[in-house]
Amino acid sequence: MARAVLLDGPTLAWARARFAEYYAEAVIDPPRRLARREFAAFPFTVETMMRRHAALRTPEEFRAYLAREVPRHVYYSSAYYRRPSEPSMAAKEWLGADLIFDLDADHLRGAESLDYAGQLSLVKERLTSLVDDFLFRDFGIDPEATSIVFSGGRGYHVHVRDERFLPLTSPERRELVDYVLGTGVEPLRAVESRAADVRAGSTAAPLDEDDAGPARGRAGARTVQLAPSDAPGWRGRTTRAVLAVLSRWEAQGTKAAAAEMVAAGIPAPKARRWAKVLIEHGGAEKVRSTFTIDVFGKDTPGEFLAAVVPRAAIEVQGETDAPVTTDVHRLIRLPNSRHGGTGLRVVPLARDEVPGFEPLRDALVADPGAALTRVAYRAEVRYPFPDGGVRGHPDGTDELPTPVATFLVLRGEAELRPSPA
Image (cartoon, rainbow, N blue to C red; front, side, top):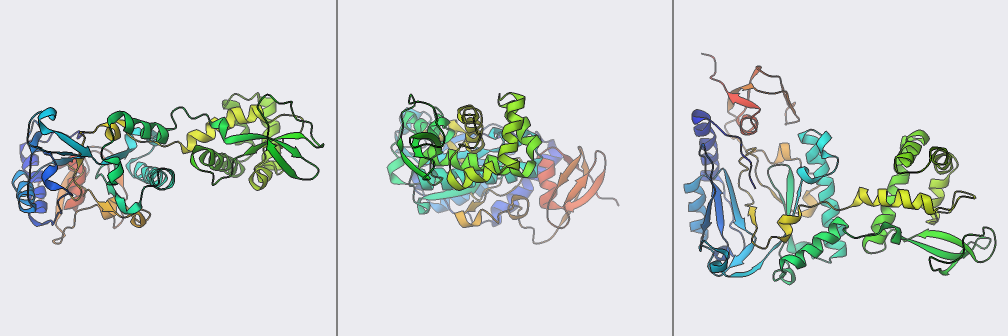
């Protein structure tokens, strides 16, 4: 839910005026099944308190609500209710809920070291994995039944409107989240121990885990095989991750690969030897071409797998805000509204629009008058906005396009300054 920077009187009035202009002009379509939704808004006040339980029956009521409230943040329920204006959940009478996935930079591993623009780039990468690999591929959800929405902050929401998911309870939705997160997944299941005729280059049926160890170079030898990269579910996903790790190590070099293996618990001498096998002697290419992790000579691949496969799985593990998905009464940000912490638009996107979407360009509110607003920076700022970006240092002043100034003021990184006489 929203975390807003407190604004003083004049700045609060200025920001509210910017949002009032937007809601007076913007054409915002109401969500599906409008009359069954609850609406809630944070107004522009010094002490921001959410106003909940609004019920809007028609598109006209919906648009009048936005113009009247001028919300700093505005939400609607993912749930459908018989009586959405009732103050208690029991009295509302729950009828079902859209399935919502939330990806935000706050929940992404590795995002803490990135700036805002870097976090936006990272979360978009994870979004495509969530949508393509999990929702479309594994869950079999029709892309036409999904809607992708940039949140206006640091993430994306994915709305699933497939009728099959509407009645799911919270525990049932938790199972979907656990699958996406890889909870309980054992990455070593992505590999199979097979009987192989090494000389003939053929592979027989899988062996049980307790079968005898390898005897290279004779019929009945044991080889360890990755699942096909297009195998369904976590088996194929883990194989793709192992191959990605090997490609990264090839790019980074032997020393970096060995260091990472040591960090994963492999003794340093063995890690250096394996790194040379993989990178300098073509082992990684052999794994890539044959899917056989039997490249270490007298060493069995078990120790390598135990260290690297879990590490690889982490690289592709889904990351989503579980409470958003499991909460069957969740309020979600309204598409095409403005985010009260950035002033950016909450932008709905088709799947094929995601790769080219740049939030700091495409989510800026249009400003036909090209007005400038004078600000003083309160922090070191650097953002790749259009037309050369914005850079500033504390106590420095600048005249910026009003949507950019709004972004910085709402984030607490700049304050309004009167233009010089």
